[in-house]
Image 1 (spheres, rainbow, N blue to C red):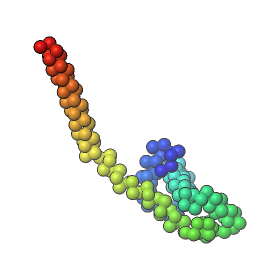
Image 2 (cartoon, one colour; image 1 turned 135 degrees about the vertical axis):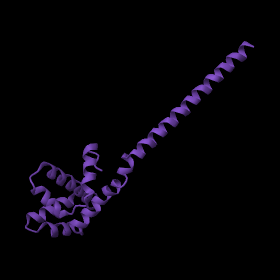
Image 3 (cartoon, rainbow, N blue to C red; image 1 turned 180 degrees about the vertical axis):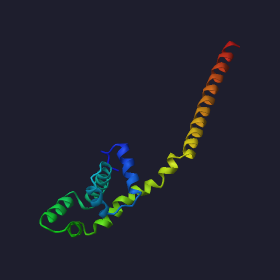
Image 4 (cartoon, rainbow, N blue to C red; image 1 turned 30 degrees about the vertical axis):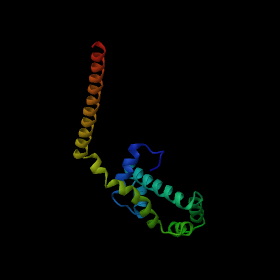
Length: 147
């Protein structure tokens, strides 16, 4: 995920991608006029743009925009610049986020919470045992010096 996004934005984007949107959904989301839909559209678009730039170079976005400015519809302009359709590119870009989504319920559920508590309790027990063993050694050393 993009390092410039905060955790809240990254999680929101992750949940949005669970819906498996297509690029046609972006136009609908941008046109809806609601803040939530616009935020979802911008998040999905940012993920797609970042993936396209990573795979095809930063200039590919400008190439797409230039072709659209020349009158070429977006889909064909995208394909000419990247060699793939917008839906294929979006599916690839968003699938990485969806892979993480399968782990999210397991990491945030009750079982994970109790497993974390158990691990912390085990670590605390081990630390206490080490402290007690060190204290016993100090007492034994002090005892041996007295005798």
